[in-house]
Image 1 (tube, helix red, strand yellow):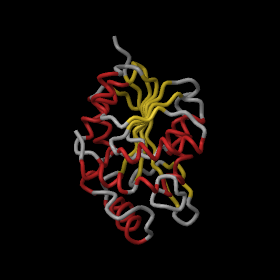
Image 2 (cartoon, rainbow, N blue to C red):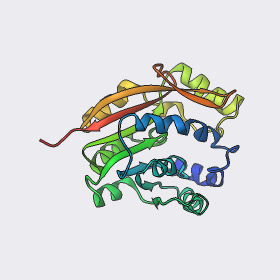
Image 3 (cartoon, helix red, strand yellow):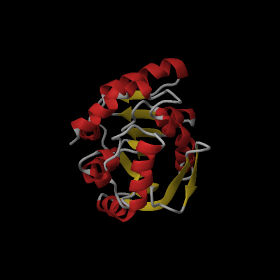
Image 4 (cartoon, helix red, strand yellow):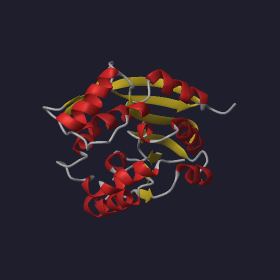
Length: 232
């Protein structure tokens, strides 16, 4: 289950993924904080990791540089091609695939130690569908990381109006407010799909210094770490 309009949107911007001053520059700015959050809860060395909705591979490559064995999937074929091409520059090894999560979960049930799904849930029509298949991909006891935007007035003002139209930090039309997810809603979806919540942190971005920090304030962007229940 996917939204073709969202896939087309990212296909059209695929050439920008590794331009540090381009449309995705804020992802490069926040990536070190995302990586630090992940490494707080698990070692990445020699772990089998799957990155869902990998785009051009910004996080995927960082996970490899931290010792992980990374498979990364996305439904935007041009983004996957850009990600593969960048491996010639970075010299890293990532298994990139343009494949839907249902097929991947069917072929790789309970295979991965770690799963990341960052800045994706707000772009899909049914977050529960994605989370359910994420659970299928993880081994019992595996760790998953999700990030998305809270559905608040502040997130609308700063995450859409200011970020897209005033500061031009991200392309216009990137986000649809109705698809934002409250932390309580995401927590319930995770519990319903066999996850135990480990931690939740807000992500604060300074558009002047282009730096990001973790915070306890989850009113705009936030990240969640959770663990798949062990089978009885």
